Length: 166
Ligand SMILES: [Cu+2]
Image (cartoon, rainbow, N blue to C red; front, top):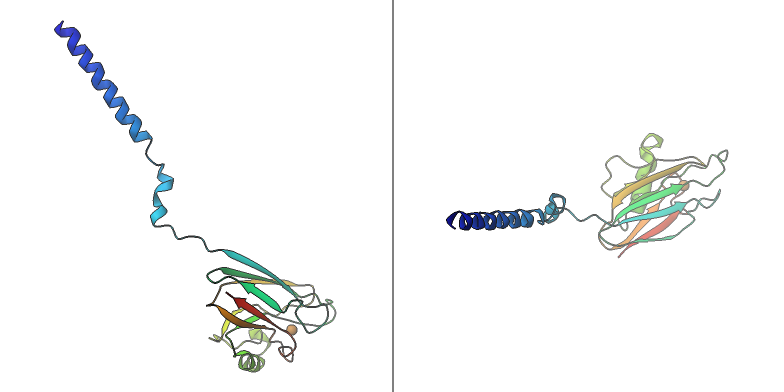
């Protein structure tokens, strides 16, 4: 009788132990744990932009992106490769396009017509030839309207667009 009773107790203990193990197994998987420290991924916005054929103009004049996003501008120079038509894309702070373009000309071709470490410039690509492609990524600035220009000498007055962040 005593032996039987202790056997019963034992099996009860083993069963409890198994339940505990079972509960442990049901805990969240380790991969789900670091959620508290994970940085939420930024929304990426891809803006496709081109030159308007052989013209000194972008094929779009109004670009937009939401505040807080990561912007990628994919730029294609649609000019004929033999045209000698060179372009870049430069995103600048509001009202600074005249200065950035003028000083860009002074900076010259090796700097892609943008003054070195120009704080007015939010993003820029190198100068590319007709048929070439380039892209640049940057964090969307604060809401507002940002001039997008080509700083190749003589272009910025004609070759411009506005990036609206809202
Ligand atoms: Cu241009």
